[in-house]
Amino acid sequence: MTTQRKASLILEGASFYPGRGLDNQVDFIALSGNRILALGTRDSMDPYIDDKTRILSFSKENLIMAGLHDNHVHLIQAGILEKYIQLYDAVSQEDAARRVAEYAKTIPDEAWIRGVGFRMPSWKDPSLPVKECLDALIPDRPVFLMDEELHTAWLNSRGLAECGIDKHTPAPAGGIIDRDETGEPKGALLENAVALAARYALDFDQEAARDLVCGYMDKAVKLGITSISDMTPYLSLDLSFPEVYFKMAKNRELKLRVNAARNLFEDIEVFNSIRQRAELEGSGMYRVPFMKQFVDGTPANYTGFLLKDYSDNEGTRGAPTIDLSAMKRAVEKATMHDISVRLHSCGDGSCRAALDAYEAALRKFPKSRSRHMVEHLELVDPADIPRFGKLGVIASIQPEHLAAGTMSWSENCYPHRLGPVRERFTWPFRQLRDAGAVLAGGTDCPVVEGNLFWGMYVGNTRTYYDGLPQGGWNPQETLAMEDMIDMYTSGAAYAERREHELGTLEPGKLADITVVDRNILDMGGDPGIRDTQVLLTVVDGQVVYQA
Image (tube, rainbow, N blue to C red; front, top):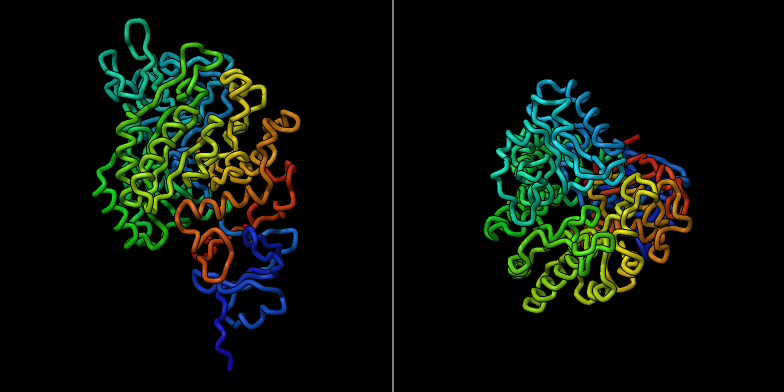
C-alpha cells in the first residue's frame, strides 16, 4: 500500500522554466490543492496519479513557468480601460472628441462619459486639449478623459461645472489647472489637479467598483497574469475599495492575487488595521503590504522632476508633486513599521529624492523588513544607479514605457527632451541589474494595455513597434529573456516579500502557473514574443483560464 500523496492536477509534456538556477529537465508538475506537490521526469509521474487526478497535456513547443506577476497596475483605471472608450490611436483632439461623442450615444444612462488613453505627443498639434473641442459635440453631459500617462485629465464645460472648477478654484500643491488669460479653466488638469475632477468622475459605489475589478481580472488571466500590485493612490485620490476586495475574497471571486498599495500619508494606525485585516480575511488573495506616493509627473509633460533643465525647454526642470520633507518623514515612519514604500519617479531629480528618503530611513532603522521601491525609473542619474544595490532598493520597472505603448520611434520625445548625455540613462535596466538591484516588472496598465509579453519584447530588444531604431534604443541596456521572465516572476515575488511561496516552481510553493504556446525563453530578439498566447492560467491551484 502506498502513502504517497496524489495530485489533484498534473500538467505534463511542455518545456519548463521553474526559475533561475533550478533544474529545467522536467516533464511534469503535480499540484495538490493550492500547492505544488512535485516536479519530475515522465518516469516518476505515475505514483502521483489516481482516479481523481486531472491531467492536462502539452507539447515541448509550449512553456510552463511560474505565474506571471504584474508589479504595477492601477486596477480601477485598468477596469475603466476595459469598460469605457480607449483613445490611444486618436490622431488629434478633434478626432478624440468625435470618437467620444459617438461613444456617448451608446451609454445614454451613464452619469459621466469616461475614457482613457489620449496621447498628446502623437497628435498633429500636441498642445493641451481644450473644453471647447468637447463642448461642440457634447455640451450637456459631463466628460472626464484621462491621458495615456494618467497624469492629465480633459473635461468639457459641463464636467468642470459638475466638479465646481472655475476661475476661483486654486490649483492644489503639485497640480496645474490649465487656464486662459482671464484665469478661466481651459479644460485640462495636470498632476494633483486631476483629483479635483476625479473625485467626482470616479466616485464609484461598491457594485460599480466590483464590476471594474472583474472586467480587469477577466482580461488579465487570459494574459497569464496570476498576481498584481495595485497602485490605489491616484495622485491625491484614494481608489482602494478594500471592502469590495474583502467581500470578493470571502466569496472566492478573486481570480488573481491583489496586493494593494495605500497612501503614504495615511495614518499609520489606519494602514496597519487594514493590513492586519487583509492578513486575516484576504485568504492569501488580497493583501495590503505597501504604501505609495507620486514624487513627480512625467518628462513627456515637462512635469518629471529633473536635476537640470529640460534640453528643449530652458528654465524648466519640473518640480516635486509632494512636499519632500513630509515624504521623508512618512518614509521613516513606514520603515519603522516594516512597511514597504513605493515612490513614483520618472525624472532623475525625483529618483534622487526617493533614494535620499530611503537611505535616511534605513540608516535609522537598519533592521527594518521594508523592501522599498522606486517606480518607473525613466531617467536615473549615473551617480544614483549604484545606490539601488547598496541600499537594497528594488527597481520597479515597466519596460513597455520606453516604447510608449504602440508608438513609432519617430514619436519619441525623450531624445530632444533630455539631450544626448542624459538620454543614455533612460530606463537603465541592465545598469541597475549589474549594480545589484532586484528588478520587478510591471506594465502600469492602463498606461499600456497590460500585456506582459509586449513588455518582455521591448525590454529584450529596446525597439519600438515599427522595429526602430535598428539595433535598439540604448541597446547596452537590453536584457535576456531569462531576465525578463524573472522580473515578472521571482523579482515581483521578492518585491511582495513572498519569494518563499511564489515566483518559482518548487514543491511546497503556492500553485500559481502560466502556460504559453511558445518557448519564449529561447526567442531573444524575435518579434514573435509579442504574439505569445496563453494556454492556461492557474491561480491558487485552480484553473482560472484555459484557451
